[in-house]
Amino acid sequence: MSVAAPANFNPEEADNLEDIEKQFAVKAVQHMSTYWAILEKVRGSALRLTKIDDDIYEHLKTDFPEFDPAATINEDEMKSKAGKERWRKFMMAYEKKVDDYNFGTIVRLGPKMEYDQDTTMFVPRMQFYAIEIARNKSGLNDWIYENNQKEAAEKKAQTAES
Image (cartoon, rainbow, N blue to C red):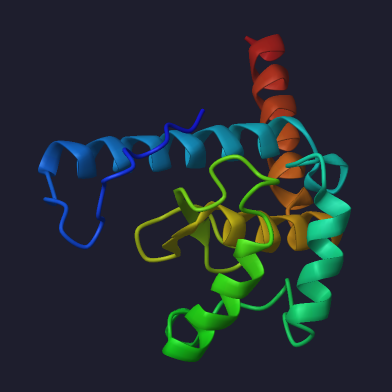
């Protein structure tokens, strides 16, 4: 659920209140934890993150033909002036189509990585969707489900032996 800022709100002059920052961080971590829990229960290749995953994926391939979902993200390149401008243009297409399109979210730098302080970065939600939709469509997140199923089966076997 998004809450509109007051009409006279100027983000350039807003106080950077510690409590607000903490609330954003909590929301980002909750989103990260929820997404990981879903990937443990459902193959990424069978998952839909939005109602318009296919459109987002095609748009990503058009605007970022060099994007390789299997590669590790170059954070410096993505957050460079040119990178930010390309992504801003991409994201603005979803301003009225995707809730919380610009809300801060945590994304893994690579599809073979788990969420960790050194393997993640903070991005707008739309970047997260584009990256993770591409990874899911390529089957690159299926290992999370497979590992979880294997661990569950091993745990069940150990319990049966006891």
